[in-house]
Image (cartoon, rainbow, N blue to C red; front, side, top):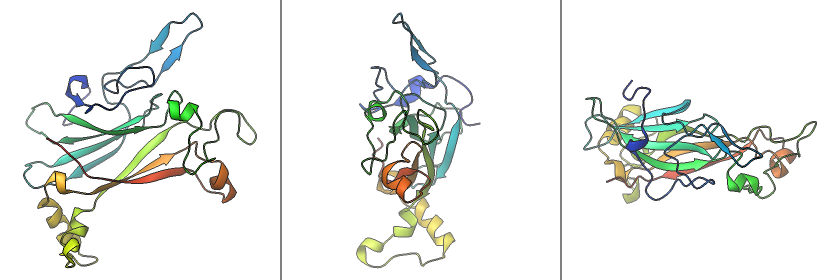
Length: 215
């Protein structure tokens, strides 16, 4: 409701990152991309957010309304996107700062069969009982602000005790955004070979710890 279904391309700040394999940028969301036999290209290149799967509000000192962390899960052929923005509820356009992208069947890492751990990216045509990837989607999933839990811990005297949720939230609100450690997960659906398969795991992925560097 803070943004609405409208063109956000001019509000995205990539910070020199977010280059897609086709040379374009992640200001547009390509959930349908195809190169025809005659060389013509069809690219949905959507200007809006598509299929936001994760959405978290983060309190921060110096911000009246806090920050949003936005995680898409819309089948972006060049990698799903995740952004952070200072919440503006007065109608002022928000600026969306690019954090990362991952996955997608036209992503060069995917096409090269890159996976961590090595050998887990099963690639096309390597599925028991079928062919092609089960899914090339990578989902940034879930957000946890660690600043409250870790407040004071660097000096050996953590401010909040275990189970004190109120203290945690109060400390989060007293921490500036660029001093925060924000943790989020990434589900990587096609990382299901190698050691993942051997141990009958669901899928691979990563857990990230992210410190913003916003203007």
